[in-house]
Length: 45
Image: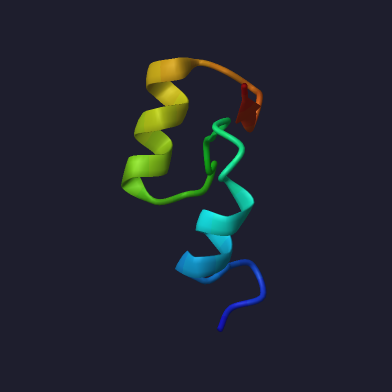
């Protein structure tokens, strides 16, 4: 596994707080989130 990725199970465990995490990467969906939110933060909650 790429050191920059996490398993789905770990991601679910990490986000069970009810907070919203925005993953900022270089993929199309990540770039769309960056453009639509215009927000420099990675964690909202």
